[in-house]
Image (cartoon, rainbow, N blue to C red; front, side, top):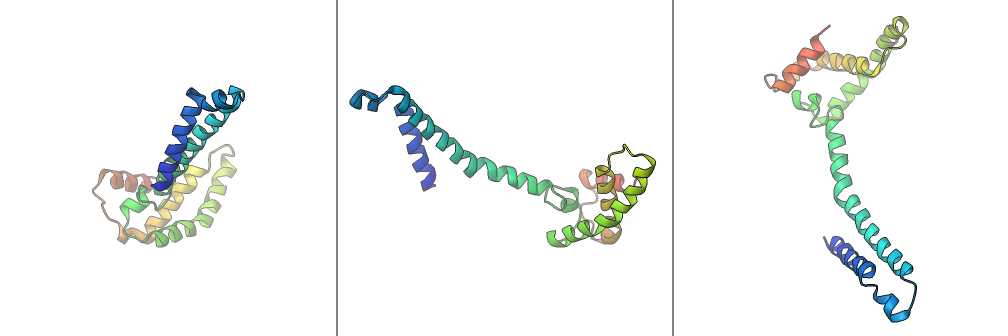
Length: 150
């Protein structure tokens, strides 16, 4: 909080330098130097805001949407610790990539990412079927129907 107040003070100084140009009046330096310095202070404040408030929210959202994250179907539809869920997800990787390679021989232009993810979800569900939770929620219901299809 203190550093945000300090950066807000820098923002205020930057705005004063840009608008009022007190140094150019007192010392006679070119106004472009003062406008440049004020602009740098404003940019420093914007970087601070981005680094302190915006970037952490984006990283939280990214982590929540990854497999086994709180916003992912694996995190919402199974009662597992995150580490165990991620281990089960990663263990299915090699077998699923081998299965998808066979699919790519038949259709070389097919996208493999969605097929690998569906395969991983099926394998994970085979091992952890008894850890299902919230199976009546619309998200989990749709997820279980999706992985059981085909």
